[in-house]
Length: 324
Length: 101
Image (cartoon, rainbow over all chains, first blue to last red; front, side):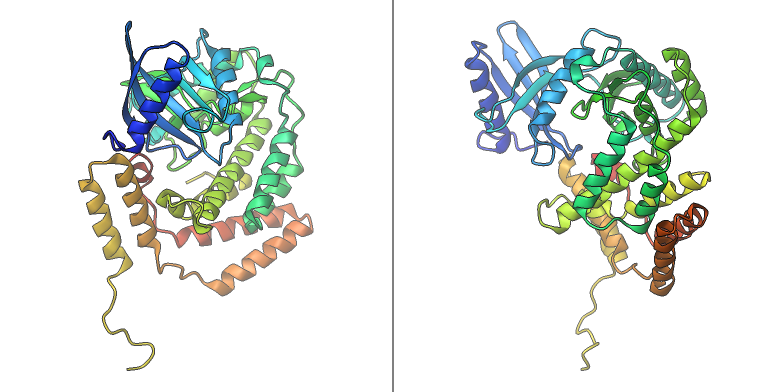
C-alpha cells in the first residue's frame, strides 16, 4: 500500500481527484486505498469515492512516459465499446484527456472489479485453473464478436511486425535469435484478417481479475485496436513467466466453436512466434530503461534474466519443439 | 598484498540473495516486497556469467551468417543451440513474488 498519510503522494492523489470532481459538480470525498504493484506502463491507484448516494470503489489510472496520453484515449474507447456486452470489464466513470488536470496529465477512472489478479495461470490450482481458462476463452470470443469500428483502422499482421521491428531498432542491436526470428516472421506474414475484430492487445492471466473460480473482469485496455483476433488468442497462452499449464488445443477448439470462425494453425503459429519476439522486446526495453537510469524499478533490472528463457522458448517454438 | 587479494571477502551473491528474499517476506508493503524479490533474483545471478564465451561467440557468428544467407534450416538449429546455452547460465527469478509482491 502507498503512504496513506495526509502529506504523502496518495493523499495528493485523493485531493486532486476530489477537486476535479467538484469542478464537475460532483460533491465527493476520495480516500486512496492503495497503489497497484503490478503494471509498468500505467500508474494505478485504488480509491473509494464517497458521494451523497454512497461509496464507489474505483481505480484511477494515469499514463506514464512509457505509455503516453494516447493510452487514456484508447482505454476509454475500448471500455465504451465493451460496456453492456458479455465481456467482463470495469465500467468507465470519468476521464480527462487534458494536461491541466490535478495530476498534470490525462487520467481515467473506472469501477474496481472484485477479485484478485493472479500472476499467471500456473499460480491457480486445478480445477479452478481450467474453469477460469474456459471463461477467459469465452470472454475473448465475446470480445472478438464485437464491432471494432470505434477503435479506428484495422492493424494487419504486417503492421504488427513492422511496429515491433521499429521498437526493437530503438532499443539497440537485436540479439541474434531475435534477428533470426524476425527473418522467419517476415517470410510468412499472413494476409490481413478477413474480419478484423477488437483486439485487446494484452489478453493474458496477468490482466484478468478472478474471484474464486469466476472471471470477474478483463483489465488493461490501453493497447486495444482493431486487428487480427488470433494475435489475442496466441498471446493469451504465451508464458510471460511460467508455463500456463492449460490444455491449449482444447481451449483453441472452444474458441473456434464460440466464435464460429476457423482457427488457422499456421496463422496462430505465426502470431505465437511474434508474441515471443514481443516479449523479448519488453525484456530488452525494460533492461535498457533500468541501465539508462530512466527507472529504478528493480523488476526491470531482473527482466534481463527472463530474456534467455523467452528466447529459448521462441527458438523451440520456431523449431516445432515442445516449450519448457 | 597483491592486487588480486581481498582484505575481507564479500558475501557470496547466493547468500545475499537468500537473505534479501527472507527480508522481503517480512516486509508488509507489497510494492517493496516485490522489489526485494526482484533484487534477490538479480543477486542470485551475479557472477554467473560463466558461459563459454568462445562457444557462444562462434554460435552467434554462425547464426548471423545463416540468417544473412537465408539458410533457414541452419538458422533454426543454431538458434536452438544458442538459446539453450544462454538459458542454462541463468538461475530462475521467483517472478510470482517479484511481480505481485
